[in-house]
Amino acid sequence: MIGKTVNGYSFVGIINNRVVLAHNPKAAEPWVVWNLDSDGDPYSGSYFSNRKSAVKEFCERAFCYALP
Image 1 (cartoon, rainbow, N blue to C red):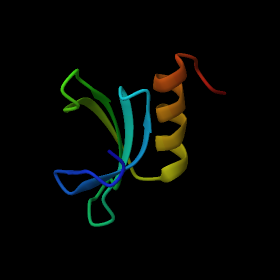
Image 2: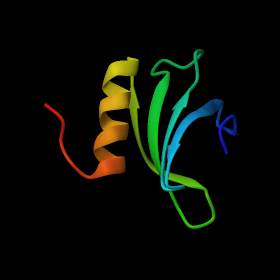
Image 3: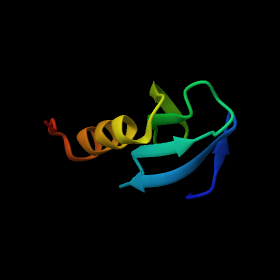
Image 4: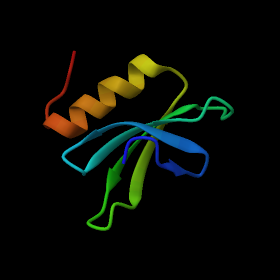
């Protein structure tokens, strides 16, 4: 599923087929973290202007804990 594109965002990270990190360098907020439904379709996105914040959210969703 890495490399899949949805709305111009390419999947760059995925955990347990349920949380995805995606990137679109042309977007105003180029990073997004989505949950995936049982069909692999994204929902509940959080959009970010920087990679660091997106990766933090990705880890928090994937591993169910808050990072400092």
